[in-house]
Image 1 (tube, rainbow, N blue to C red):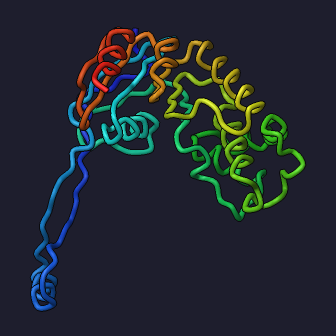
Image 2 (image 1 turned 30 degrees about the vertical axis):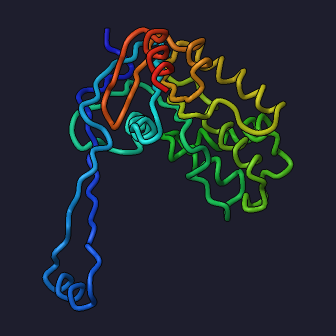
Length: 243
């Protein structure tokens, strides 16, 4: 049986161009000769794993380990330099919520735009405007430019759009609740429903105890590589002991 998520030997390399600072004459000569010091950053290096339907796969590691970069590749935001990522089914990415929304557009317009960026049919998104804004608690401001929204209102709206489906794949990067306490509880319930619906789930979090209650397997990353992968209790215990 094919898994909803298959990550096969994925690497991502960034090119960093740095010119050494010297005299104005040296700078001019380097510019004319187009001489640059080229460096490479391996954000990910040979990452491979699979996630089955109904499985919750936790990812941990220090800042700069490549966790968020990996989530963006799975969510089809970034292409890998080498390797292959296969994602079967509709994806709900909980990554940098609202980053694709335009503050000059109304909530209604942003719902259609943000939904289209997530790969959803604009006609379907038009039909979903009313339930989305109602769930987010911004129905009174649906035709108001979102530049007048508070950061909490924007987060609630983005969360409501992103979770307005029952996806085959759910990618969560440190976004397990947004807004005030009441909305936070409401969002956690929706997240739990999505997780329990049979989706293949990848969760990145520094909340080790929370991951321990959710994840069945886990992966510990450091400097773009896999440090350890296996049963969640073993991996999370090893990572926690190291920090």
